[in-house]
Image (cartoon, rainbow, N blue to C red; front, side, top):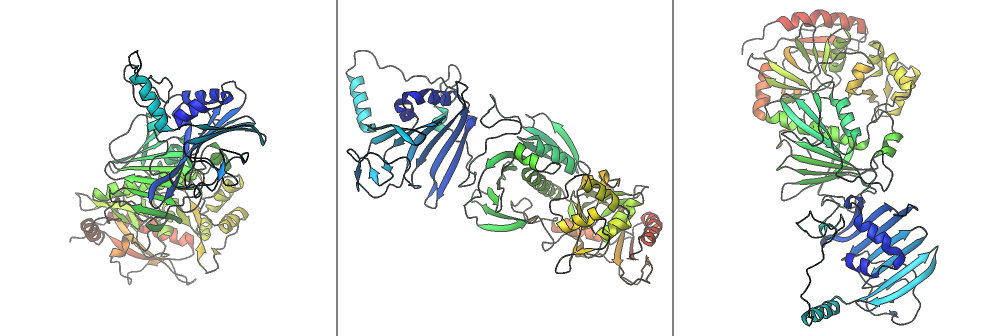
Length: 613
């Protein structure tokens, strides 16, 4: 197609074509169309460029298909030879080059050609049109048979007196090699959409801070962030700083983050996030479906062990995981400055997806290193001892941890934490960064609701998964619980960094388990907050995050089926948990009484020596 376009483009379009050949290949986007019988059935390439005469923009499109779409484009031709009807069945392939220059559109239709009205050309006949404001300025049919052309060229060379000249060296950035080392034309051999680009979608070229059509001279700058927890490291790289900035904000309170040069990639897994890759939902059918953090996702595990996936709602987020080098590529739609401006103070969908799956890759690394994931909030006391809160859902685990944090302890985990046996016979603990879900009653009882209301009324956006009724209650000062139609309590969702910035709660990055509290909320108004020695303090395997409670299924097979820890590690941790000092406590709706009980009990609990096995 490239030689055809260069040779046959009308004279006014040739400067545009030369400008296209001279520009950076990164200007190009592709839209693939898939057919179950083939990998790619059709491909459309689009390029937007500033005109060389600075008089607006040039929009160039190249389309080529093996099977469909076979729709005829352009204007009906004059009904005279060589145009005919009924030459063949409707064409199932379509190839053309289109250049939009201002109000004028030049199109080279490559055979087989079918025009509107059912008019067709013989094979090896092509059509060139120029249309301005709907009026046809030029309409020409030309014959160009590859076989005839090659035969004529071969005969001419065979009988030529002069030696056969070498093939011409291309000179444009799209086709030029380095001096002294020619290489094939980049346009003929390059694909701008990776094979995992979603079908039926286009790659959005706009980058933050750039006008549409503007392209850098060199490779895109990658913003790089190192993420470390428990001596394990993940590298996050992105074409936009919004991803690494949000990763720093989200993980920073609990895990170590460090900026790195854009060319730096540390050892270990890598997450690469690319913004603005898609414009429409995907049409491919995946083999499996799951809900990940309330987001429906389709995914397929391929024979080569790679995994591709995409979200099933817009904006589309696409994923491609390569286990051999532990590399997860994430690409998004509708990112860039428009998306950021539309949600000030909020992470973009690409940033959210990156943090979630970077956390999953860190989880996999920690589990392989012997850690397990507990469904247990934790607080580090002023003396350095860490107390875990264990129990069923709704038992008061979050109430226990936040009450201790409001009383001066450092919050290590608001919902889950990692644990691993250490040489002293206890458990080392690491946080699992996640948004805290807190009932409105507890927020008011801990005197934290006023701060949340001030931030929300100042225009700071709420967590995207927080129910609007909760946001309304917070901003209006309502103190009662907000419930869904089914009676389930709806809670406030608080990002980790807001725990400190909004509420002033100190956070911890590590801990060593010294004791366990097993709380239970007592609804009887006359019941006191107390230690309840009549309740069993035995810890069961329910302490581990189970698949029924897991909001983050292992889509990419990162943990080999051990999503919360290996069986051996879980057994060892469970034995240690049952050797640690444990007390069952009854908590009430009197938060002052709960605070007195917990702040009195926990220092003494943490100083008790673990029981012998």
